Image (cartoon, rainbow, N blue to C red; front, top):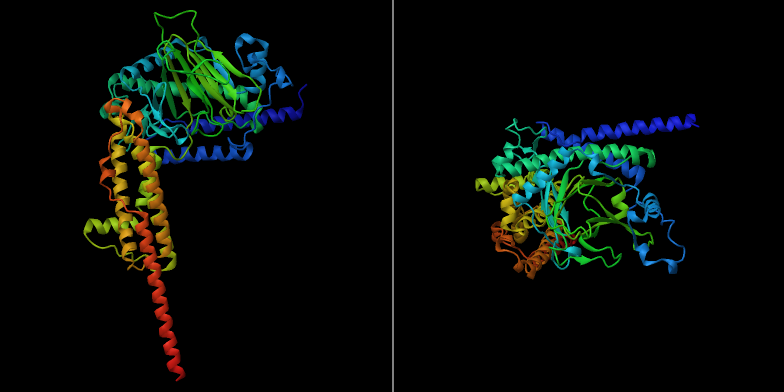
Length: 576
């Protein structure tokens, strides 16, 4: 029986669903020619959705875990080894566990998708592989010992996007045309007669075959986004507070190429659940927008040597709680399956890939990157903003004209305080550029650089910005050394010392990272190569600046004592 209250709730849910749909349409990736306005609109929509989600549903960190599965015995001693994981062969027990503890996991069977959809993915995978885009990554789990991934991978996404995991930043290949600034230009339909489509990627240096594969990936991404939104509205919206769900406007995809156990002999067994050998070990996807969904297209290459009795490729899932007795899931999926981790699933669960014994596997994992840091547009615009501040303009303009900066705008306490903030911003940006972008590029080798022609111009731009910032802070350092300028104060010393110490600490860590023996096992062109710009930078030691500070404070103290003596003498004379 339907009550008026039920009708009101249903209407409210529909209205919110409509709002979600409008937000998704507004923030989708197709670009107009007015890039700044488009970017502002997209950022505002993302920020609006993120703030509403945070207000109504919290964050990834505050999301509660699902309850322990009711099928688990109340006595730990009765828990058997077979309950460490369940498979679809476990029938009702498997279905019960999925329903209670794995809400948000679902999949499309290959037959639910068109043959054209499958053919486009298959073409893209093979074309990207033929173009050499799949590379092993050298990562640093936990910030400790370096290791090489068991799979090769490549990142494709909105122009300028990156993805950082385990201490390594992956630079994406663009999936649409780009303009002179590297921003996305056009996303539309791919037709053989539309010869100009992808032309800017060809101009950058991508081959025809690779360009077609990249553009196809972008179009397939749009299809997956639409499919995900449909599933969210059907399965998740009715289940969550106010029907508000996270985004499925996928901004990038991480494509993995995985070899089977018959080829990749050094894969490690899953020791906790005993599910099998993992090509990708247990993890949550990082750097994603809270409550955003994930879609994965799973494809197996046919092999003439397939052992029908061999083990299949499987996706494994578990609740992200070391104390839970809820069993993990091990799910074999046929080639051409798309599986989804919807809404808050990635907050509560971890997943892994269990290697098959025969066929080669490709997977394309489509995600919504967290808005803000991590894109070319973000760091480029931040550089432009900081370099337009007064301290940079004064130094750089004077430097170009062979003059001495006057700092006439720093005549009072408020202006001097603002100058300290600007110098601090310069230092912070230098650190970010060096360790989050420039060094991340050079550590991945010359082969990586050649395969990413889109990023050639931005990396040159980052180095140019770094030199300009170094010029600005270098001049400030000279003023600190001489201590003759009116703008010098203890706060200026303090922010400079802190930034220099932090940068030197990070450089020592990178020096250790580059000495790791793993790089000797790589081909010469895959090893880190030097950034000449960083090699030529004159490094100042924080201890030097501390000495200058001590001298400055001592000089002020001496001056203060001298002034006191003069005032005392005047007072004595007046009494006489």
